[in-house]
Every structure is written in C-alpha cells, then in structure tokens.
Image (cartoon, rainbow, N blue to C red; front, side):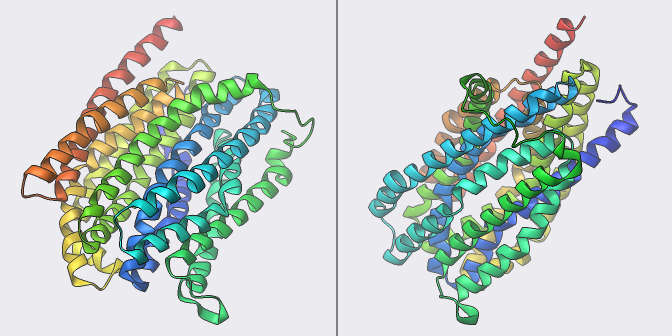
Length: 451
C-alpha cells in the first residue's frame, strides 16, 4: 500500500481503479440487458415472462452474491496490512461458501419460486416463459457464485482490469448464444425467452473458466498459490465472511428486491405496463452501473487505506467517490429526460410500450441523484467494514417508508403504476441522507481510535 498521496494523484488512482470495474459491471449487466432487449424484439409475451423471471432471479442472486463481496474488504485489508499468507485461505473458504450459496438459490428456485409463479394471475404464455427462463439461468448458478469469489480476489489486489477483460471476452459470447437460442438460427432450437436464460447459464461457465485460469497461471497471482494446501471448511473464515457479508448481502437484497416486488405488484396491470416498466427499469439499472462501480472502487481504496492505518486517505477516497457519482448523476438525468423515447424504441416496436416506458423514464431520472449519493457512501462504509447500518437504513427507507408510499400513491391517486416509482424516489432520498450522517460518524470514530 503506497503512502498518502496528493489529492490529484488520489483522483487519478480512484479513476484507474473504477474504470475497469465500470466496464466489468456494464459488460456483466449486459447479460441481463440483452436478455431483455433481444427477448423484447422477439415477442411481448416472452418479454413479460423474462421480466417476471428476472424479478425473482435478480434480488436473490445479487443478495446472496453480495455475501461474497465481503471478501473484497477482507482481502484488501490483508493486502494493505501486508498479510499475504491470509489471502489464500480466504479465497479457498470463499469458494466453499459460494457452493453453499448456489445450492441455496437452486432450492429457492425449485421449491419456492416455481410454485409462486404458477399461483400468480399471469397469462399462460408469460407463466411458462418465466419458469423456463429460471431453469436456464440455474444452469450457471455454481460457476457464477464461484466467479464472484475470484473477482473479489482480483479487485482486492487492485487488479480490476482482469475482471474487465474476462467479461469483455464473454459478453459477445452471451449475445451470440442469445441470438442462436432465442431466435433458433443455424439449426438451434427456437426457445424465445427461455433461450435467454440458457444462454446466460452457459456464459457463466465460460466466465468462471477464464477467471480460474488467470488466477492460477497469471504471473501476479501465482504467488498466492490458491490451490496449494487446500483446507477443509473452517468456521473461523466462514464466520468472518458471513459476519461482514450477510449484512452486505441483505442490504443489496433489500435494494434489488424492492424493484422486483414493485414489478410483481404491477402484474395486476396490463402486459404492456409490465413490459414498459421493465424497459425503463432495465435501462436505469444499466446507468446505475456507474455509481455502483464507484461504490466498489471506494470499498477497495478505503479498505486498503484503513489496513495501512491511513485514515485521512480513506476519508478523501470516500469524498472523491461521492463527488464523482454526483457529477455523473447530472449527465444521467439529462440523458433520461432528453432521449427517453429513442431509448424505449431500442427495446420494442410496440408504440403503446414506447409511450409508457417514456413516462416511466421521467420518474427514473428523478432518483438518479439519490442513487448517486447513496451508492458511494455504502461502498465507503463497506471499506470500513461498517455494514450493519446500510442494511438497517435500506430496510427502513425502502420497505418501511418507500414501498407503503408507493402503494398508497399507486392505489389512491391517478398516477397508477407510476406511483410505485414515487415511493422508490422517496425511499432512496431518505436513505442517502441518513447514510451520509453515518459515514461522518464512522470516520470520526476511526480518527479518534488512531490518535
């Protein structure tokens, strides 16, 4: 860990860390993005089916994968504190945890999600596509979680470009598989929305295979000997991973599941409304990759700074993350307001869906600023290993405040489905304000401890 740097060099270091993370996140998100985009071009019913299926998949996967994100600050602090010997067992035990989490998700899909979908008041084609889409995604569960462990290893070392190159290689493969399996070209079966799920599942195996090869044979990483002296599962490491990771995972689950719950509540509206909501949510989620990447960069740099007892550096990296994210949010708001119709037209040729999606984009623009403030603060707090507050604040702001406001607005005003987005905006804003106070308190506590 280098000594304290000037602000200009910290800004450069931050950007150097974040840019590969951003490209990685965008490319990784493109898997779901192109599932929605290419399915929307195939058929409206299949688009609605993938929308319902992904509403179950995204919050559960991201929430449980978030547990594995605890490895990033854990390993980053080992690196900052020059405890290289602790890296290998942390990764090995993380692989064990990833296998256990994959088994949990598979059980949830099989025994809970499928029965729920079958009981929902959906049109028969939409219900069938939703189930088949989740079956396809399940093919890649184990490698996807295991890859998350290896990515945490790369990122904690500051080698964020490795994850970037891996995803850039695999993203075109996913698009090709979508093309073959959704539309049935070149003799492949025409599976529609289900084909998008299987294409993603197969892609996750490719991603893991490349990451494993790099981790084991790449020159900077061989020294950690990740496969040597392989240990049996040890509760000591599991405890640290879960103690830090469960609040992170729960926090992410709370944030992502609120959008899925809103989508499921909209199942009482028309198929066009569900599809338009998903179009708007899909694109705004793509734009969220920038503040999310800044958040992940803040976790790495704050974690390394704290591990090296450089509290002033950690504070400056936190501030830089917030400033970068706010700057982007201004650009995002302009894009969503000015280009909302052309963006909606990328997803579908159905004029009714385009009109509705354009209206959803207006509300999507309104919560960009709150997202931009909240995300880097969460990342900084994770770098400090302060993770419980983000979980509690997320639950209260989104579920206790945001969702009821959304439901009441959608039910008792003429805003209809747009009322749910009003609730999301209110919850995100309250969460951003609360977490900003928490970050200041944590920074002051750390400074007192290091005096």
